Length: 186
Length: 101
Image 1 (cartoon, chains in turn red, purple):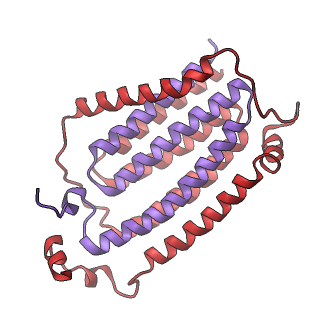
Image 2 (cartoon, each protein chain N blue to C red):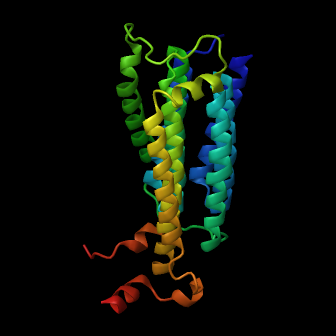
Image 3 (cartoon, chains in turn orange, brown):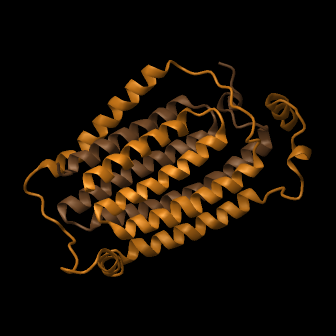
């Protein structure tokens, strides 16, 4: 039963992410990315990492995709993207080989037999309970640092995005090409 | 037919290579961000799977921290993206090259 769910989820995720990177329209690729995030949370539920699945659902497909959708309003999203591409099979071959090498490097220690779990949590408790216990005892300082980092990122985002917010984009940029813009600045 | 750790790691490799292919192939800055998200998710899957199959909770906690980092990366990155779009009026990476070489 779990295997069936895993295969359905993984096939759907792979297809959706392929649509994401291959699509010419940026709206299609954003929607398929959001759908893939939701399905990845299903994969976490199959694994038994319930809390991680819930966080994935809330943060990724809730917050991050909403942020992208709002950021998309600044750009001309309906226009198709024209780009000149290097040959596709070469790119896929190179990226596949490099990803395989990375996973072999990082998974090599876990193939060894003498690995012992470091943090196991209480026996018989459900997953969110155990994660909460470990997060607020052993990993308290990284948790707080992550909170501070989120605050810094929020302030940086506000400051960066709100510069010249009183002018509209068409006023700031009226069809000049970037090189002329650069010369103007000099 | 039971699921093993290898199944999840193979899926992680697939998704990660899709992400790298996206980073290499696309010339649009927003697409680069999407591909980065795909790679982070692939790493998350590997972390969670290894954590469950070894019985160690650290993997899931690090996956949580990765999600937090990804959220802040998106916030800062979108701010910079909007600034670049205001400055150059395009998201095409080829248009950003100003050195003649």
